[in-house]
Amino acid sequence: MKSIGLVGLPYSGKSTLFTALTRTGAAGGRANQAVVPVPDPRPAVLAGLEGSKKIVQAQVRFVDVPGGATAQGLAALREADALCVVVRAFGPGAAPTEELAEITADLLLADLAVVERSLENARKRSTARSGGAAGEVQALELALARLGEERPLREVDLGEEDRRVLRGLAPLTLKPWVVVANLGEGSAVPPELPPQTLGVWAEIEAEAAALSPEDAGQLLKEFGVSSPGLDRVVAASYRALDLITFLTTGPDESRAWEVRRGATAPEAAGVIHTDIQRGFIRAEVMSYDDLVAAGGWDAAQARGALRVEGKGYVVREGDVVYIRFAV
Image (cartoon, rainbow, N blue to C red):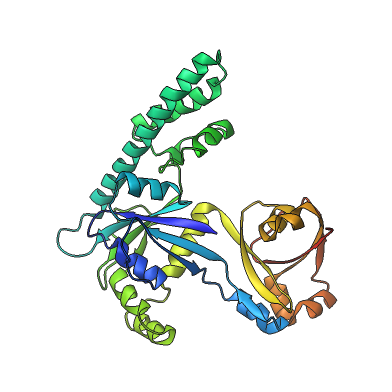
């Protein structure tokens, strides 16, 4: 399960967006967290075809960190897998590009401070070990130089060793970002914001979050919201994190699983359980569309839609997978 940290300036509507995304009111404290199912109709469809007793969605955790760029707030954000940066684009005096620049500057400075401290310690260790930490020093020097140029680390061409060194520091500017413009009713995303910026009417969607799903859908429809903010923020976060979804189905349950794009069949098996990865024999795979078109797993198999794949198979978005393994 991935974690997405919400960050924004005061009065940006960050906590309102949290309520809209999670159907949970702000509770205060160090960090307000909520786990929500990833919107995906496919497990329910598979459950209907296969008679599954249970439907299990993939899940994502949203973290609303109060206090902005405080030490506690930054520490909570460092634990997130991706950041959702919220800027105010409603009301008089709205300056979303300036807000985005200010947030970026705050996070750059936070990373700069962490890298500087780590570099100082790494240099001491390198001297004490006669150069044993030289690779760490080199990676940190590169990061420090680029941060000093006000370049987020996700925009820097880093080698695998550089990323390994930095991973332990959890730099905020190395994490994938999703920018959300909190809009006023009827307005659109300001054109000066980055091209992939999402526009969400957080106030309206927070009102909808307090209603039943049917009434919420009707309210959003009245305001012309065809795709709820949760669906779009999660989809954008999956793209930013380079994740795909594969599925499993059977009499017990139909379930969606997240895995990194490019994962092999054994790696996907490991998402289900590490024992399954260790004992992996083969994967029996068919596409979701083929399974649904045939009306079920057995019918799709009879049509020749089933493929038997080995350890080198790269899992695709929407694969329905059955893993054969030995204990």
